[in-house]
Image 1 (cartoon, rainbow, N blue to C red):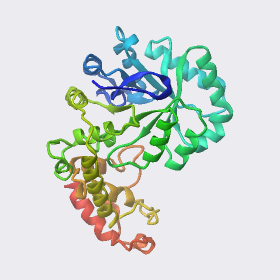
Image 2 (tube, rainbow, N blue to C red):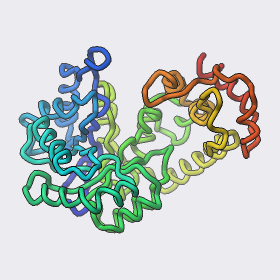
Image 3 (cartoon, rainbow, N blue to C red):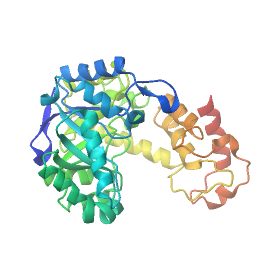
Image 4 (tube, rainbow, N blue to C red):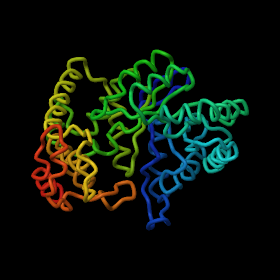
Length: 372
């Protein structure tokens, strides 16, 4: 296992981290809990292989993730860097402290090594964090309940740079992968300023965890997309660790194998990857740039989302993931709206499309491919 410094925290962290967001579950609906008979052996397998960074959050796994991580930490606590998050954004000190106290109790720890404001963006910084919540973070650090002040980031590169320049965080947890390199400039600046970078979603939230005849042909000797995805992130020297959400023992074993043999891609290999990805991105944008001008649809057809999923398969060869994501539209609380078969051919969307895409025809084709 390879280890890197997590910025000015001084912590030495494994390049592969364990994301405790997608642990195996049992039960139904609101009664779902983590299947401890599967999850804890997975976590211990990673620990024994040298993974020393684990990340959780209040709401992960139907709010059961932190408890399972706490159980898995028994006998391992002194060797593991523990990260979790506080999702509270309000001028209410009691509410923020309750989240922290609950996390300490559920994790069964005396302190949290990496404590994140969950889901930071520039608006939350200016309205809540800078004027109020930062003071609570500093107080918790003074009381030695947390070791390092961090945040998970969900915003654009311009606002990432502004937040870095505040000098506030010791580390930042953010999205970065083969399909989304939009924060690359900010990642480099953070590293330069001594702020540790924790990459979440290194396999694109599972999108790059499947087979793809397109992506598997990029680099000779790289036969699986997860290897391409993880090694791409590992090859960025500005990133300290990549936390991968693992749901099965097979995923744990594959990720460990990749991390143990994670020779960085050469400059020539990275140039090849860059050229291929730019070409594929242009191909996807020939059809839809995701500008959302076509929305709202009178029948709530999720046009940009549908085309994004269609492009996962058509352009990147990620058909299994694309079909699953398409099936989620209209069935999950965070995937509201309708699939393409709800289109009534009114043509309102086509009148608004700056790309002049034949949206109705493409929706029918996307439905045929993704439903099949």
